[in-house]
Image 1: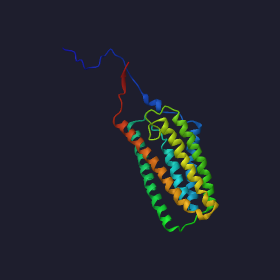
Image 2: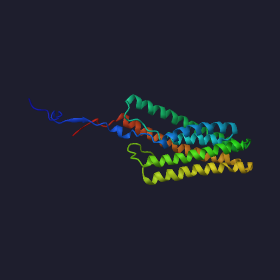
Image 3: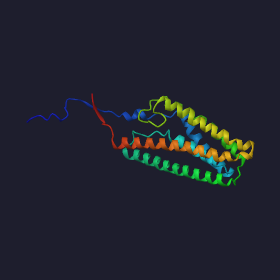
Image 4: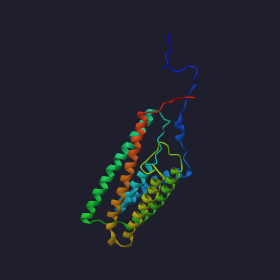
Length: 234
């Protein structure tokens, strides 16, 4: 019988290459601290923002959460079902973030039209201080993440060294600027319009995070639908 040239040769050893393990990084103490502290700051900012009637604090809490979600590490060593669950969960969260982005724009526009609102300056001061420390910690975690081999985890911000610097300095610098600008209200309540302006700027930052997370989701789903070969000849 004529030998089928397309059949794999039995004498060629084949091994399973599970390259996904290289993506499973153990969290450092800084990353664990960032996760717990971010959660605490988000809850505190939301509470202080609602009690103090500051839309900036509520919007910035959403921005901090969105920026942290962008660093989510998908488990490529998991089963396809679990990976799909991760993708769907992050996707639903991203949709909620987009709805909040729209809500912030509409609410800020309503406030700008009437200017009939007041802000508790003490709550604003405490919330801003917490937000600035969280922003600093997130910046450090971003730079630590960029030092690694990103591999598949490509985002709109980390495609090149230039984009990394743009996100690290531009995004987080703007976040600092927004937080500092909100303190104008503490100095003089005549600057209460700053709450509206900073909400607009923060909403734009949230939109950049939403775009990046969506881009990651696309690549994760594509890798799930088109997996690489599990076996390679040696």
